[in-house]
Amino acid sequence: MDIEKVNSMDFGEFVDVFGNVVERCPLVAAAVWSRRPFSNAAELEHHFLAFIDALPQSGQEGILRCHPDLAGRELQRGTLTAESQREQSGAGLTNLGADERLRLAELNAQYRARFGFPFVLAARLSDRAAVPRELARRLRRPPALELRTALDEVKKICRLRLADLLGSNPAKL
Ligand SMILES: NC(=O)N[C@H]1NC(=O)NC1=O
Image (tube, rainbow, N blue to C red):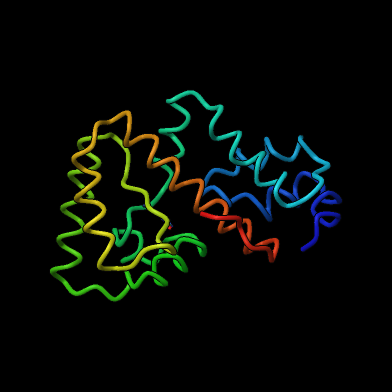
């Protein structure tokens, strides 16, 4: 999709197409639409990321809370968004054995209890062995640092999803 096509979209179409670039947060796309016209894909991406950065902490935590757990209940129930389903299955999280699933469920619960939001990681840049390792590592970090890291992961997911829609390559992730 080229940038002229993006710039020609009315509000409803834009939110339909870009509404899940940030998982279950169509408000971000709704806000970015008012920044058009965009000169290129990089500028469009910039507005998504800048909106997230400009939110107060409560809004940033709200964005994190809209993410489903990795290998969690929604994956078992088949209620993930199409994007999340693709990302989690690409990382092999749909093929976990019972012990791996249990271990991740325990770590996810500990993480949520400590920080008050779910563990978020760009699954497409990871795999089933690395996810529990990274979760265990991040569990020990100070909350303020962890909020920043989790938001950086949201931004990586956002950039990858945007690149899929635009048929472009994200600059270094
Ligand atoms: N919890 C979490 O990281 N979820 C997300 N990660 C990802 O790559 N897709 C998601 O839905």
